Length: 400
Image (cartoon, rainbow, N blue to C red; front, side, top):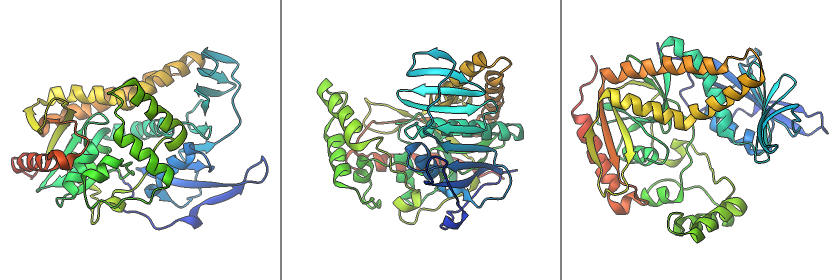
């Protein structure tokens, strides 16, 4: 059975937010509630820092009214810097323990979490994706016994078939999806999908963060209004190549540090691609791994066994989120005697890998090598990718 999840963009829910006063001076603080999937609810509290503002933006489509029950996780903004009594590492970059809370400090930002990993507190500048991985770990643990796993990749319906394209970041997931949507396809997700061993796939409609070259590559995308500061940062990014020289690399670093910040501007697919259609669930016909091929000028397809693709998924998920989780959990277990978070992760990975193994035995699998082109329109990569996907979907049959 497909796990339940929000399938359409909600209307404004300002009245659903719980507004209260902080203890440190009466400043208004907002708590919003978000059902990620399968009834798993996260409460996000606070405002004014990217750690919660971007987290809330990522899950705004999953926002729900306060049901009155205790949420499965709480994530809140804090300015109370922890002072751990036990530390692993350097003072500014370390793991630690302060009472019953696990502490992570990283370049001036920090996160603390209780022993049950249900109450997370973050400094304003904490990296929000690191919190997302903790939330998703809890959701993955809930869904794994039901036969579901989280796959890093885009998913779409195109030319009568449903295709999943797993890949590492930067290999062309978003551009591939834009290519499909502008040719009449529909989407399940740009970055992550839930899959089970029987080939069922569930959409995960989190926002995307398009860059300048994507708006240039795909005429017709709806561009956001940008400030003069953002325009300057985009122009610098357009003309500087970090692989060309130390000077270019230095200019880009300073631009990120002082002009553009983290450079993220989360937007939903429907706000970018006119007439884009979200598909909440489907059945997988094909899994095509995307891999960057810097020396190629055209998109090519190679045979890839399900077993080889499963091993590639293991590496992708290690790089994208499991490596960070493993380090957090090893540190936690060493600081909290009796902790078993590392064992929980290992058991989850084994369960998820079994799901991927069975899925990939049942569907068609391929390796798609993608040129590393900055402008897909000028290089012809858009048409090349569409033609490739048309050939792949022409050769699959829909499940009976």
